[in-house]
Image 1 (cartoon, rainbow, N blue to C red):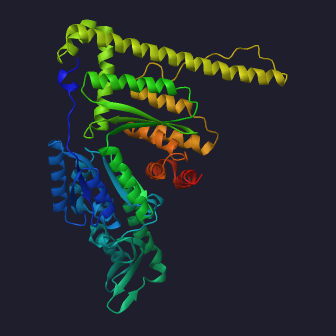
Image 2 (image 1 turned 135 degrees about the vertical axis):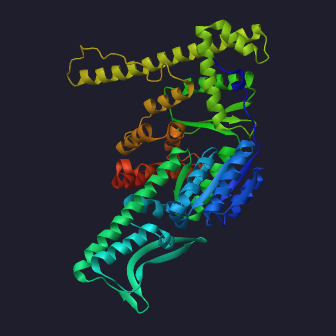
Image 3 (image 1 turned 30 degrees about the vertical axis):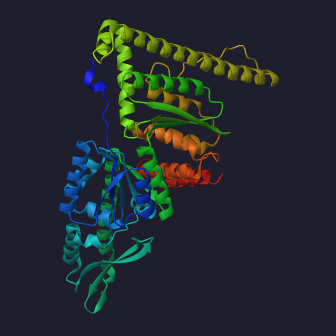
Length: 489
């Protein structure tokens, strides 16, 4: 049974939380242009301040005013996340941030270093209790040594943000360096490397937790990349874009998808009061569909929930028409109008699926005829018939239909492209799967604006890096190289 209250979407004022300092002036200007207010908080601070930020984010969410969180995770912030004193505050902060559209930017070398196990750390690790344990273990195995075990770091400023270049472990005393005896060197090296490997694993787990909470992680190499991705993110969450779908030219599902979007648009407008439009941009290579709300405070989550409620309502109408009519009538419509609307929705959806099935079968038949003609020309027999296969999108939900159609209809010969598409299907969060499939198509379409393509590239690279523990760094580098090459084609 559907709760009638669930059919009433909420509205929110545009407030964005910026986590980092300094933040780019161009981003602040963009926020003003979009009519959004901003709250700036700093992560280079104490665990108590992190708890305060989490509390403020939760309050904004409960008040319905938070629309986005944007942050920069520097090397020093990441190391704070791994310290015992910060872990509880970090867990609270991630959970709070994940309740809203959010993105965290990480320097690409830092992210790659964690997944590659390079052992990059920074000056704050001297606060890690594990380091003191290592010093004690070394004393037990090689005896006393002057001074302590220190970390010497080489830093470089990158567009106003200090980033770690490399770290060297050394014994040090007031008189200078002190080396372990030659026959004990490998004991020290083993202890230190074990500690570094453990820290890298904690870093990987940290990114997995961020992704699990629905937060985008975007690796960047330059300030320009970060600004481009930030502005594109703001445009999506504030300007009313609820969903984007990109399909290649002559896609057999293009008419089906457009009909589905129009059906969903009509439902959310007529029943849920969400005023939306469906826009399409055609290029020589493909078509970009944009489902946009005319109320910029609406969220993609509202559309997803509305789609789910729509499917439930239609299913209820098939099983118990009178109950479905009563439910719709409880929202203020007459029983007569409710029945007319439900009849229209069910009939339109049935017609869309029937046309989709016929289109799919016609395409399969055309492919079979071409194969048989080629076989005959080569002297092979075609007596055995090739059976028609079922439409992979038949019988599933509206949004899921879109994903299935994209993944079954993309025509690409490059094996890396197909491998990456398969990785998205198998490893991505279901909440982000449609978006990743879309940006994979966008990044290589030169007729799409450069800003949108650059943003698409960075989103894909973030997903690829987060898949490193599953596919390995060799595949990560191959996929990143492939995606980067698409932006220049």
